[in-house]
Image 1 (spheres, one colour):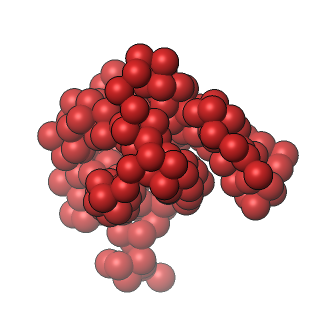
Image 2 (cartoon, one colour; image 1 turned 135 degrees about the vertical axis):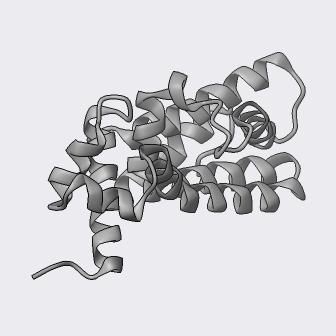
Length: 182
């Protein structure tokens, strides 16, 4: 029995996300995705014009939520900004683990793609919030360490259940930033 168009599209996205996370974006072909999704390459191309179009759709929800987080953080300063940035990044990275892993694996090929926001500007704004808007070089280093640590850790495999991982990511990031963890 053939798949309904919406179901086939969802199956293609699921297969692509799983394969991109396992093999990398560059290491996955359209044929790999079609075979995994149980369709022909022609059927895949009916739903998506290219591998780039699939990636764009996979990353879009995370991008929208990142933009919403940035908007919330823009009005905050000091301790409030730092804590909200940690909580927001931990939440985002755990909900979009697969997308984070895809970006990390092929960062050099994906970082300047037109469908992604200006990664350098976004990371600078996030580091600024993580530091509580501190301009000191030391705080900036800590901000980068906290952000990269959250992303790398969330993209890995863990024995901890999500709730415990969320707590440890938050505690570790706050410690890295020199903030109280109680």
